[in-house]
Image (tube, rainbow over all chains, first blue to last red; front, top):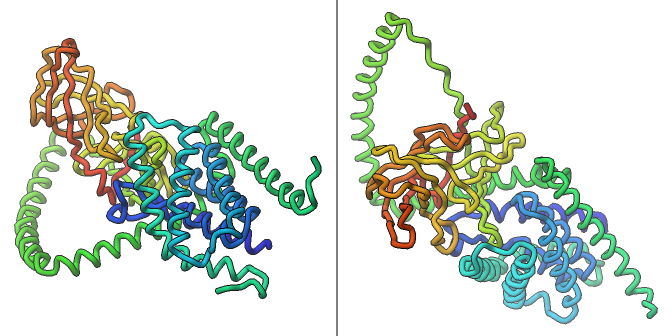
Length: 164
Length: 282
C-alpha cells in the first residue's frame, strides 16, 4: 500500500509539473490539458475512493505549489473529484478508454466550476473559453495517458484482480 | 445513526486527509503572509523543477525536429541567406572591434571609469502558468548553475521588457509578466516624453492578452501611432529606457475627455518565450 501511495505522489508531481511545461503549439486557446485530472480519473476508476482522495490531495498540492496558486480551492475540487470518481469506480467500466476520455473532460469542467467559487475570475467570457478548452484538451489527451497509467495502477492490485 | 464497519474504515482516512489539506492550506496562507512559501510547496517545487526543465528540453527537440522535416526546402534557402549575412556581420565585427579599440584609447586619454562587467543572467523558460480561474500570466525560468537571481530582478529580452522575478529559489524562479492583469508600470513615449501607466489591455485574446494599454496620459498628450514606448523609471520597479512596445491605436473618446488611452503592441512575443535575460536590480 505504501508503494502505491508513493507512486501516486510521484505521478502527481510529474504530471502536475509537466502540464505547466506543456508545449505551446499543443495547447488549445493557450490552455494545456489538466494532466492531474487524468491521473485522478485513472486512480479513481481503477482503485477506489480512498486512493482517489489521496491522489486528489497530492495532485492539488503539486499543481498549486508549482503554479503558485492558493491551495484551498484546489484541495476541495481535486479531493472531491478523486473521491467521487472512486465511488463511481464500480459503476463505470475503467478499461474502455473513450469512457475515461469523457469522464476526464467532464471532471476538468466540473473542477474548474468548483474552483470558480473559491477564486472568481475577473471576467467570465475568457474563463469560460479557457475552461472549455482545457476540458476538451484533457479529454483528448486522456487516451494515451489512461492507456499508460492504467497498467501501473493494476500492478498494485491483488494478483486475482489484475486485468492488465 | 450508526455507520457500519466498512464505512467507518473508509471515512476515517478521508477525514484525516481533509484535515491534512486544511493544515496545508493554512500553512500556505501563513507563509504567503510572510512573503515566503510553505515547506510542502517548497518540496513539490523542488521535485517538479527538473520535470519542467526536462519537459522544456523535449518540447524544444520535438519542435525543432518537426520544423526541420516540414520546412526542409525553405530551410536550405534560409541557410544560404544566413551564411551571406554571417559573412557581412564578420566584416562589421572587424570594423566594430577597430572602433571599440579607438574608443577605448580615447576613454583612457580622457580618464573614463571602466565599464562594469555584465551581470545579466541568461535563463530558459521551462513553464508557464495559465490557470483558467485567475488568468495569471507568469513564467517559470531556470538559470544556469553558479548564477543566482533575486526577487525583484528584471526579466527582459533583447527586444524589450518581459516582467520581473517575484519568487526565486535555487535555479528556478517565477516571473510576473507585464501582461498580467495585476501588473502596471510607469512608461513614457520615447519621442515626446509624455508619461503614463502601462497595463494589460482589457480585451483579452481568449487567453493570454497580447496587447497593452497606456493609460493616465494627460489630455492633449503628444502620442501617435508608431511611437515607441519605454519605461519611465518613475515606478521604482523598473529602470528607465527599457523598450516596452509600439503604439498601435490612440483613443480619445468623449467619455474620457480628460485622458488619452493608447493601445500598445509589446515588442516581446509572449506566446513564444524561450530564453530571457534576468537583469539584477540596480
